[in-house]
Length: 302
Image (cartoon, rainbow, N blue to C red; front, side, top):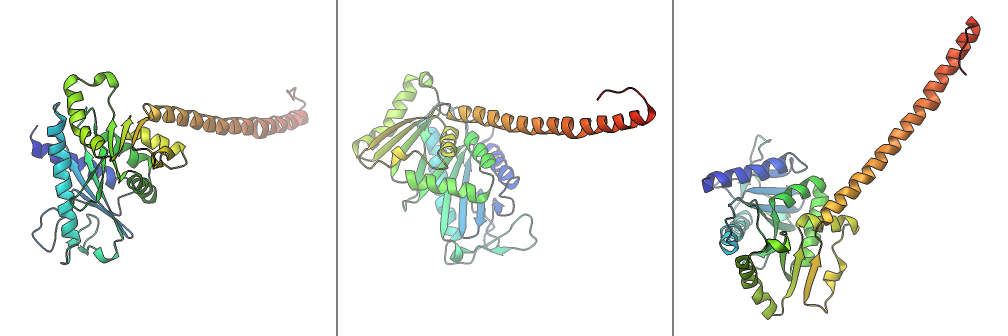
């Protein structure tokens, strides 16, 4: 498939997902510089109160080479986000347009207190990938894959909940080199292992705090939910330079537990309804039928 077509499809996927959920009133899909060259500023912009979220979406097909894939996705997306930030917060007035509004709006750069940067990579079957990226100015960029982003949007279904997650995520991981490993251990070929070690070896040499997450972002989200919406406390240990966090299948376990609890809650409602029908409706109806039967001298069950 042509890369431009894949790119357009990727942007449409993220924009439709965001626009169909809680982001509808605050999201600007593919905003353009309306009072300038009309060029696209970023793939998606969200403005909520004093917070701005800049998205870059990449839909490159993963063909087995992780280094090339990261260069075509993370590196390019990081540059795009950096360029979008410079445009939005330049000294010039920036006008953008919401698809549901008739008139253009001025981007409220002076009232924005916090900006989040997010890359969504839609390529599938990647064995490992960096948990985050940084701009030339050292600004943190959150990375999500397709499945994780879709799940997070569905589960964190209010803007404050979503912001709470990415803010705590950024605060915890911004000073750490983190790699997430969604693939099974036996799914790492010799070539993949070489790519993995070539990317991670520098982090082990320069005393950077390193985190290896065995699992997916969804597994981390499950831990976040079960831990009263906080990330693992152990990652805050200042005396340790390296962490290996095994969270495989945490999401599936969480969903199974959630479904079981939902079933128990549904059963409670069902039992209540059954009891109500039996105690209030059937008995009363039988009682009334009995009264009517007595008046007519008709045999009945009491």
